[in-house]
Length: 157
Image 1 (cartoon, rainbow, N blue to C red):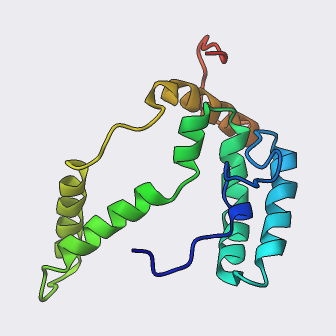
Image 2 (image 1 turned 135 degrees about the horizontal axis):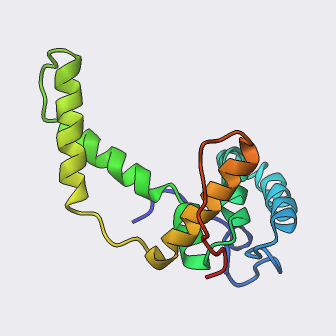
């Protein structure tokens, strides 16, 4: 059972009454629509509006990589890292008295290894090589003197 009321239908991608083009892959259009959505949410849902503004650039960065929709959606979500943090928190809760930084590191590593056992296959995993090539290209454009070399890798999959 949800404690918070659900987000309004205009705030959900793919919902009935959705703004046309809200889920488009055009980055400029998506930025404009997300900024308008944040403005509309500001009065009734200020936390949601702030969260939307905070993650706007990262969300659009993923869109700019031109990945398949299922992988793009997975990478645009914070669920993966939040689940990992939750697993580490649950494991660390068992410790009654921390005895130094190395103990913290050991328990954190143990918690990550335990969480790894429950990881599922990445949705859109077949597009990961394409993601790697796109990331390399972005790095080359951001850092022209980078030591990174792309060896005859086609961009189109």
